[in-house]
Image (tube, one colour):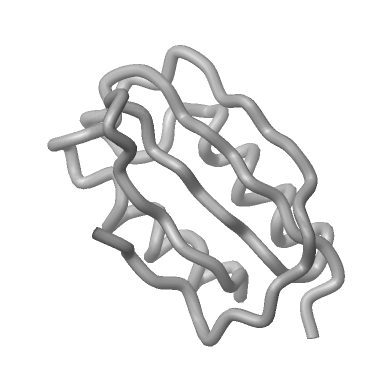
Length: 92
């Protein structure tokens, strides 16, 4: 069962650059559950649930710029209710 759950909104050049795919790979590598999805305002929403250290590593990866072709201008992060996700998915 996940122990922490965070939601992050990532702003910048984060759509059309493989951001969701690479976020999914990073989350799976860290053993984090949740999802990533594009938002109508051009940002990307990431919900991450799992062990605190793994979730923090994913958030740090987002803050450091994510995938190669992205440009992250800012990341807003909040705690959210822990949910029971099966793996880490891409939502459309």
